[in-house]
Image 1 (cartoon, protein in one colour):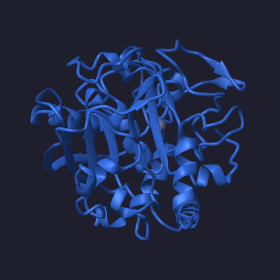
Image 2 (cartoon, helix red, strand yellow):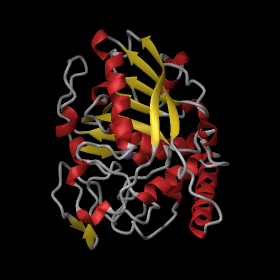
Image 3 (cartoon, rainbow, N blue to C red):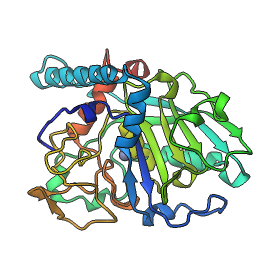
Amino acid sequence: MKKVILSLAFVASVLIGCQTNEQNPNENEVTENTSAQKAEKQCFTVEVLEEKLSKNPSLKGNMEAVENFTNDYLSKVKSGEIAGRLVNGKIQIPVVFHVIYRQASENVPLSVLQDQIAALNEDFNMQNPNRGAMPAEFAGVEANVNIDFAIEDVIRVQNKKKRRWSPDDSMKFTSKGGSDVVNPQEFLNIWIVNYMPYQTGQILGYAQFPGGDWSTDGVVLAYRFVGRTQRTASHEVGHWMNLRHIWGDGGCGASDFVADTPDADGPSRGCPSYPTVECGSANMTMNFMDYSDDSCMYMFTQGQKARMDAVFAPGGFRATMAD
Ligand SMILES: [Zn+2]
């Protein structure tokens, strides 16, 4: 989305929730992750944003500071004053999983967590198996983000009372039946919960952007959307690294603050054929920050990589993680 409009809403967007409209979900049912492929994904950014802002008036300024730093960093890289953050090597991100479960079937085994890490490593290192389908139009802007993930620790908490969770960060606190964040300036914390209903569907996951409170910093996933073929984590980690939805959470003209992602009128659904034209250009429906089916999203762009780099650059919000 080329038209950059730095609105208050975007700057202050705190949490992104991704919802699926599965009908009659049964939280007690043990199912495979294939439901994520068929579900219609949605987000409720604005509702969560409003709630966060009402509770934390300083958040707007904190997120503006991140944006100002990002813009300054990008302009310095463009002018050649500084080199790109990831030019000379990888960043290694240690991940702490908090598996919060009620019954054994929700207690995601280590093998599946390892599968999830493998999927993240594929997606952030330009090794997604589906990228062979890349349209020539987008091949030139595809980016190897050059970030590796590895399991640092797995914390398991059985909460026999909790059949469902709200996207209110309660799972991030031991005092609320969840699990406290672990050293968020060094580790990516990922909480996995059993079920997050929302209206008629359920939430797949949500992330906190750079600039939020450290005590709630990280990503939340519902357990059914964790694993080798899942892309919810890649999408949410993208948010955690300061990426916006590719359609800019608005219609044509709304910006994701990235120049090499074409303008789109809204999120994609299913597995769109190429070209799907909106706003005068073909949509990049295969971008991880869209809402296409997991098997149909397989790329980040150079512009998105540059925004992620800024987060880890000296002085950036997550600079301590890249030391
Ligand atoms: Zn999202």
